[in-house]
Structures are given as structure tokens and as C-alpha cells.
Image: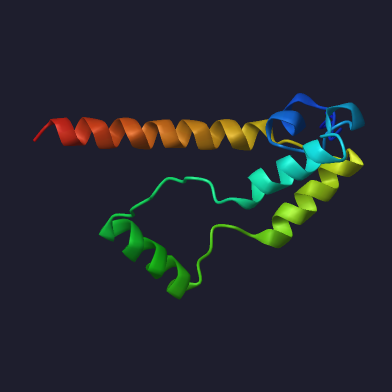
Length: 113
């Protein structure tokens, strides 16, 4: 399986990736107007985290048990780029079944009370 990494791909254009020359703003007055608009701050959304989320984040940072492994991600990216990445469908299926069984048992145990 090959992952498309072309800047002309649909995902790249939606995510604000590189644009084709024909799609770029024109130079001159239009470009200056676009630059001025980009310099002004845009309205955002305020996000508030619950106290349990904050404590969970602090606990994982202090414990050093990070879920994200940058080296593993980089190795996977290289394997995908080289075309050597192998998907272990059996391991994925086992994990999905395990997660489903865990969810079913926790929901069944909670409804008995």
C-alpha cells in the first residue's frame, strides 16, 4: 500500500497544504491585502479542561509513561515511505476483540447495580 503524499492531493488542499501556482494569491495589491488580513488576530475558541483531565495530564507527565513514542512513529513513517510497512491484521483483530469484550463487560457490570 502506498500513501499519497502529493501536495496536490485532496487532503493537502483541505488541510491548508501547499497550493499550486494557479491557486496562490497574485503578487502586488492583492497580495498586500491578503498579508494585512493575515496579520490581524482571528477569533478563537476558549477551551476549559476539567480538573480530572488536568490531573491526569500532570500524572502522566510526572510518571514518564508517555503514550507517544516519537522514535517509533519516525520508524513507521520511514517504513511506509520505503513501502516496507507490514500490517499485522491478526494483532489488530485481537486488540479490537479484546477492547469490545472489555467495553461489553464494563457496561454489563454497571447496569446490574
